[in-house]
Amino acid sequence: MSQAHDVSRWGAVWRQLPLLIALVLLWVMLWDHIDVLTVVSGVVLAITVTRALYLPPVLLSGRFNPWRGLLLGLRMMFDVVFASLQVAFLAVAPWWKPSNAIIAVQLLTRSDLVTTLTAEAISVVPGTVVVDIDRERGLLYLHALGTRTHDDVERVKRQVLGTEERIVLAMGTHQQAVDVRLARKARRAERAGHASAEPPHDHTPKEDA
Image (cartoon, rainbow, N blue to C red; front, side, top):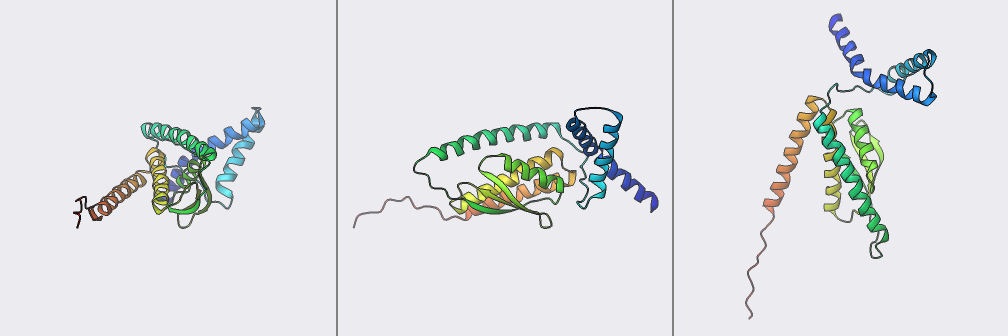
């Protein structure tokens, strides 16, 4: 039992190692000076931040898919450019009247890292900004621009879940990747079911009485 506990503890330390290194590098860059005291104080501060504070330690998955990471970056750039043009157009359109909403989106994972990265990615895109996070229930509350109808709200939710999915596939655990793929298939099946349930439109011309 003690050996298994030691393995899990060292596994957690190993998965946090990239975060510790990043914090130390950030500390050194803030001081703009490299010496023994700066590095040692950075190490001590990094360990204190990740282990001793009230917030739970951020555990990295230890997995990164370069191809999925590239797709995530390209899609982020596309979303930022497209949304910037859209917001700029709406800002100068004289006929457009603002219609915004606060939308609650249920995330698929409970990972603090994935939740944080998803919130950051959503807030970077113009027109949407995360205003609150319910960590216990895995909910993101975001302010979305141009949400007039129920379809607009559902579109925003799909965009958020799509962003979370791409982040998980790039750097989440294998189990998280399996979960988001299953959730994506379920959403597609649900949309297909709604589409097939809609009554067909009657295009037969009516005869004059």
